[in-house]
Amino acid sequence: MPITLKITPPLEGVLCITLNRSEVMNALNTQLLGELADTLSDADSDDKVRAVVITGNTKAFAAGADINEMAERDLVGMLEDPRQHHWKTITHFRKPIIAAVNGYALGGGCELAMHADIIIAGENALFGQPEINLGIMPGAGGTQRLLRAVGKSLATQMVLTGEPISARRAFEAGLVSEITQPELTLERAKAIALHIASKAPLAVRLARESLHKAMDTDLATGLRFERHAFTLLAGTADREEGIRAFQEKRPATFQGH
Ligand code: CAA
Image 1 (cartoon, rainbow, N blue to C red):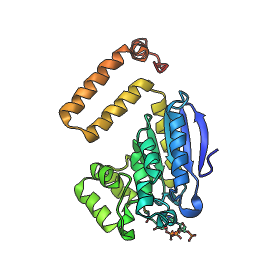
Image 2: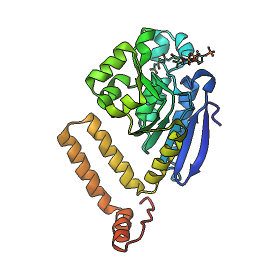
Image 3: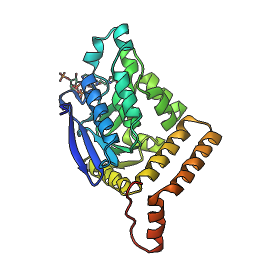
Image 4: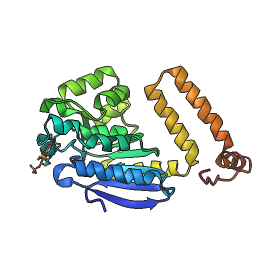
């Protein structure tokens, strides 16, 4: 049973994970990252889970890696750090993740939010990569995903100055898709997750994979992947059901095959 997370059992296809180290602004220690990776790994093979919401509390989504834990690691410790394995598991999770972010999303916290497919931010959210203030740099995708999300100039400014940006700025830059009042952030993220969970799971999976390709490949390769994925879906019962439901003017019921 995880102790650094609170987990709500899947409801209508949505699993909700709350980071639960509020006494240290949800600093991501190895135990928390490991529990998160294990939870996602289980959810990946659980048909009852079709989308995941990850959230923190009103003050902090997560204020980054646990600095006290990091202080104890030397070069060899960093090279053998199990955290890399946990990040990899989180990266390879195959279902949509919605991050509901209030308060601080700093360092590894900002990087965790950027592992999500969609970020919903409360008006009080602050996104930043302050590692430079500690004499280090982002190490869980912060230089790569942030640059792709907000562009070169703003990403460079954030990483090299360590200064965070507001929810509004993050919205304008394309890092987050919606801003809400802080008390509504989780509710809104859950509503979006529920909406996605009601769609055909295989179509969601392949559409998501195709979107990810846009981040890490050239246009021609991405278009080829998209066409293959689109064609593959022609073999699914859910495609038949979706089209028939449209023609019969009724809501579709997707089974996931
Ligand atoms: N690691 C460990 N403890 C942390 C922490 C962190 N990242 N962030 C906050 N805390 C702890 C504080 O030490 C404090 O503990 P005590 O009550 O025992 O003193 C408690 O959380 C509350 O924090 P503050 O008193 O500092 O609260 P504040 O409102 O004054 O400031 C803050 C909040 C701006 C988030 C500030 O705590 C802060 O700057 N935190 C560090 C942010 C940071 O540098 N993150 C990057 C870490 S490196 C990294 O993330 C690399 C990576 O993943 C690859």
